[in-house]
Image (cartoon, rainbow, N blue to C red; front, side, top):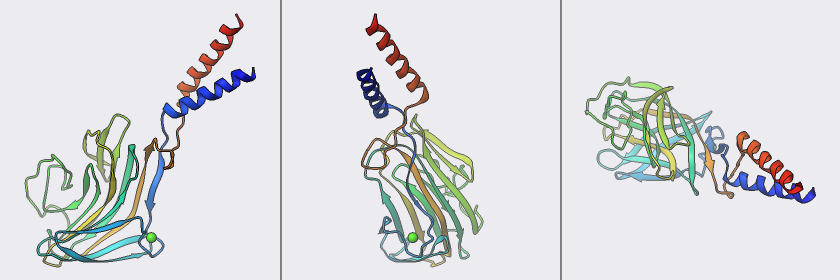
Length: 240
Ligand SMILES: [Ca+2]
């Protein structure tokens, strides 16, 4: 009987390695300890040479991006060291532009899609800058100078990539490309009327088969039933 139990354990391990995977929280930041987490890799774009920010209370507050000639930007990215299948990335943003509807772009990004606040590329998806492949009609001034949004970017087991803003589904399509990074981009205008962008939270969870990176496989209940049935039939067959 002991050998059967050993066999069952081996079979269970096999199922664990091939079965469904539970979501792990890979990264989250509530910006609540006064120091910007060093996991954020910071880089500048479009000639930017600096940015102004504070981490205070439970918010990262960006007040300017400087340098460059037209639209200096700063990116904060968290690079993903392994393969991630299903994932869920959420960011909470409040913005307040200083009297110019084109002076600020604040977006949550992944290497697959990005979404957030941008009042220059107005699309039929309520001003959310989602790319690639989304139609833009270049009509601005549609958003209030200040507001807030919760952005949710997710991919399910069928590779359906979705973007929701304030619980409304804005975009959905099939994407099989691997997830390599998540992050944020803040972009100012040369008018220096960026105003303020405040991020209250970022949260990133998903599944991974990499045992070095918080893997947490769980066999589905139906798999366990099938496995146990196979185990029983094996015993019965052997006893005949
Ligand atoms: Ca921090």
